[in-house]
Length: 113
Image (cartoon, rainbow, N blue to C red; front, side, top):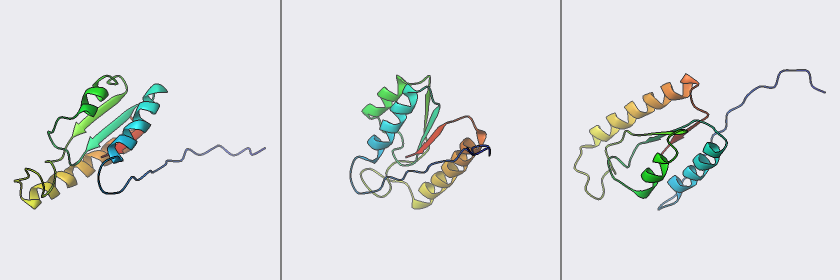
């Protein structure tokens, strides 16, 4: 038997690819963790102020899940009229915010979307 104190280790999961599915996969982890009473923070970088169905579902989990949309919308597509420097500044500020949230110890899971 090992007498050493067990060290808590983090886990990083990265979803990549073109098209849909990355946010949905991350939300699956979120829903499962909320079911276990874990605290989750979601920071969205790209979706901006768009409304989509997942936002309504997340509101139902508000006892466990916080969501912040810190991006300026999709970059260079759809109805983007922002200068790239605006997107870069928003992403940089969102990463700083995410770092503060990560180090706060307040959340069991941090999702950067």
